[in-house]
Length: 386
Image 1: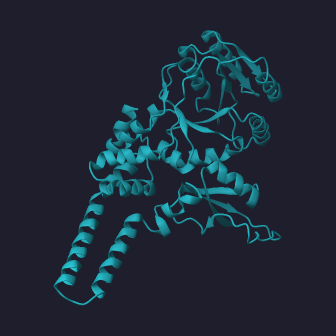
Image 2: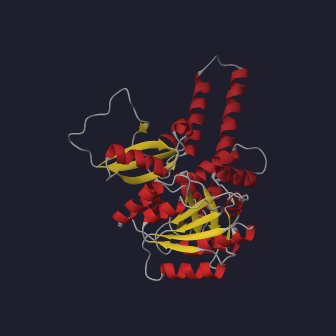
């Protein structure tokens, strides 16, 4: 088993390239923000494991891919060290250079004392921020992400707490759902594994972002759902007074979307699928490939582990999700898993589910609010404030 690392704008983009180059069995090992000096190649550093093929020809020299050595262990910063260790080493090198350069004298001695004092002050300041890193980790961020945010915020003059909030929120990709204009046509599809709240979330979107804005709404069901799934959606549609149609065939749904020129908001409920359901995933991927204009939201539970959510993003990458949608914010003890997944995948989010009540418990994703809760709150208060 070998590993290979790519720089990309998102995990799905890296996965697509990896499976073309390394084979369909390439497995996602890790993903994290790329070091600052490598951001020109992509926002994320994504590593895959694969079994090399003995007869595989080496890649031509004239067509290199952005690739580095296997990713460092979790918690390491640039070149396998934390950013704090990086700063300390640079300070030590500077002290050593000053200590051995130039003629001795009052001016040189004074400068050496100044550098030494400044370096000691810097180390004390960085050590004093260890509780901030611990707080961010307690609230769900992983250690490397927390260190990176604290280090960047420390460089900003002024209020440290506000700098933390601004740094974290500024890194998140949030794309609120723009209010629809009269005569506009938009199609949203919700996808994901079973039990994540796709159906109830779709109904909330239909009411809050469609009917409440006086936008015509249609609800479609795509593919074979579990027992009672389509009946439940049909009852919801009847209560809302909106048209509903269940399509067993994805080809029929494709033709319907090309149909009569109706204008409004179309919401598509897809069946809950797992990574093991290969034929169903392939059929849905083929359907989405024919509808590039469609917004595809992958629904995840915000109270799941970061590793589980990253695993799910990898499993649904073939469907080409355009957004992540987090449900269950009210049940998440530590909200940091949400921004952690957004940072590691490089994907945007638009909606957030905040409870079971229909249609009220849904809202626009709010990066600044999430950042305040993570950077200024304590882990036990986050669930109550969500």
